[in-house]
Length: 215
Image 1 (cartoon, rainbow, N blue to C red):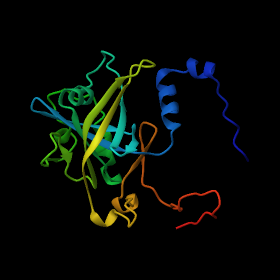
Image 2 (image 1 turned 30 degrees about the horizontal axis):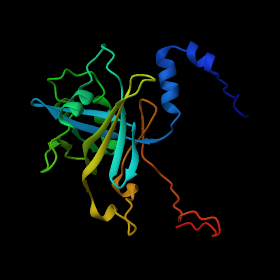
Image 3 (image 1 turned 180 degrees about the vertical axis):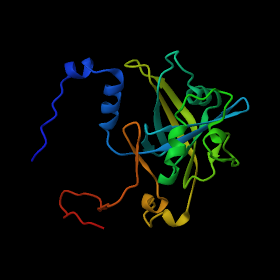
Image 4 (image 1 turned 45 degrees about the vertical axis):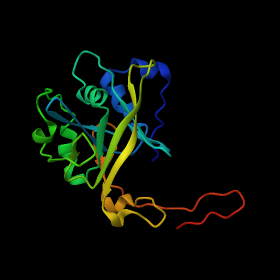
């Protein structure tokens, strides 16, 4: 038997409770790569999970991420540290580390390091003034290039230039891309669900006058 169709309009969404609506809307982008953002400021290392980062350009190599606004109800350590030091790291994690990664979203005090509280080891590398996650299969260093506070809802757009990249050499394909399956990276859906990608398909560059070829 087919499931009934869920139908919602703007009015129905606005009448939902905040928590219900947040869980629903956060599910809409589907599966996203989960990353741990490492920052450091005034002797304190911070680690926070995000799934709001995205590719913005390749020359220069730019990655963007969206951080929530400072509402006054809780501290925003990652945002504060990035704006202060202008650098951060992005660290992928495997599914067996998902519980630790999820725990970094708890509202720890600024003087409490999520590295220690959540069971991660910090790794420092020359050229990056922010800590990496030592166990991460994919480590990316970023330097702040642009910051915009978005008027529509007060969130912050941070654009970083990739300054360093570390991962297993055999994860890079002959065409330069990364085979993420070899890195066992976990994905995030919604606010609380973690998965490990299974089946995948890969295609050549799509052209108008050439039949599409699967690799």
